[in-house]
Length: 348
Image (cartoon, helix red, strand yellow):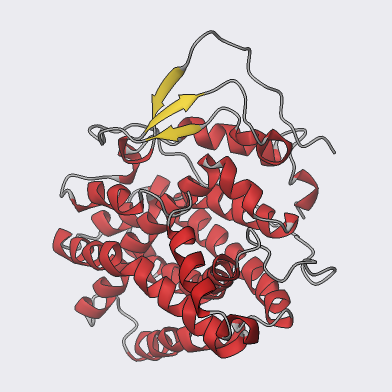
């Protein structure tokens, strides 16, 4: 299958559009690494002053896609499948382990309020949000089994993080009305809203970066991350709109975003080091390599500029749709699921 979507008509010079957190996106005619990352041929990101005033893109219904990536058929030939980096590979494994229980928490936090929603359009978007998040969890669990067979402690991280599910199921059974224990329920919804912005920034960084595409040596892991990132952007405003619709105070989401922006990446780095220390014999013998690769990872496009992209969320008037991802979404929807889309054959 030809991976390369049709290129737009060439133009003279460089055009621009506004991207996440006001980043200025330069639309170049050629991508230097187009053999792998051709959907990104038109996207090169450069810093610019944030500009998130006004509603930049029209909210559309997320699309639920049932996927089959075939994990377990053949494991990656290289254990360190992310740029040959021990640290980066362990971090991707940690993220994959976190996603299933995290996605379930997001679903519970939003679904708990679905009967209080009046807007029929928002109800439909919530249903699609739930479908997408549950599918993400299923596919990451399949990847996690493969990663566990490769020596990554994904099962342990997933088990430990499922403690919130056990607690929430108990409280939901004892107190089924979402207006009971309001502070606890709003606590989880506020966390979900902040985490959804965190993952939307992460997703945009992945889809805009040719470097990230080339760093993923395992094609199916790269495909999974691209699909997941696309759908994170498709539903980035759903939890936020539920949050506003049920009247949760702005202070809750602002406190959570302050926490996420200061501690989100450090916590991921800590989990990555724990993963290496507990399961990777080669890593334990090479502490200098671990420090060097950690610095390199934090400077790669997945995380570069991350803190700057968190700032707009802290504005009380912020809304996720003020950040225009329309062009990026259109490009990747066609590249992955168009007539010649790379993942069209992965749909069930």
